Length: 186
Image (cartoon, rainbow, N blue to C red; front, side):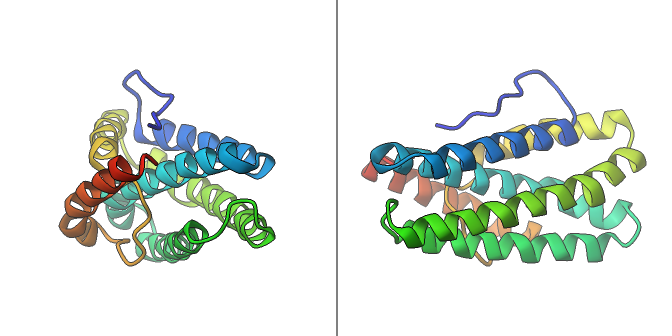
């Protein structure tokens, strides 16, 4: 089970930036591995990506839309990128982890996700840090930790908005956790 490395109270920007570093590290470990180790690393990566994006979609994006200049456009671009990443993750789940196609698609996904993370940190997180008080950022960080605990563990393309996550999220999370328990992959 993937855990956030941040255990003490912190603001949402620190929380999500730390997860970006974990994601980057998991991409490197997954690409470098093979066989069962690669499969385990991919499951952990997929889980962290699903949880991370759910937290952003429930907690960060709605606030960014309202609080930062041109927020709707900034968030809209991030949501398009997140939808694409979820679609690719679903494709990867169907491939043999040791296949050339898997490695190529995973490498492309890594490049896209790291670019996405850089844009989030610059265009969304930094601007939220300027617009919100430390109290607001810490409250959002606490909410992010709670959302992390109940988020789906698999990507769900088409569930990129706060409303969609509130409607589908708990049911998807329940199904994901049941599937993980049955397959032993989670």
